[in-house]
Length: 134
Image (cartoon, rainbow, N blue to C red):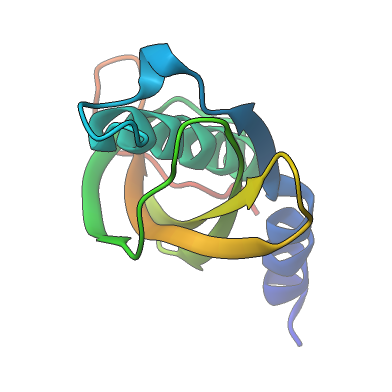
């Protein structure tokens, strides 16, 4: 493995981001499950933190490549969002986010939502810049 690849791997490991939240009524919809827009906002935030930890540069979200809602997340659940950098380009990177759900009364845990978010590093003039200074 080249020094660049080693550095990328090291940064990927250090940038993994985990956030745990409780699903309370203000975040639910008319079905008493987590509102999809809230889930997307949480996922974008976690992916942004992971991407920022990776490169420590100003970033903007440029796309959410695919979001799969595998099953509903009921009110009263605990969710854990895990963001991991999965691809590093010249000025961009991709972060995969998994959302796991568990009941407050059992330790059964399931993956409920997955998504991929793309970011571009920018300078003061909002122009793309390299995500790595190696």
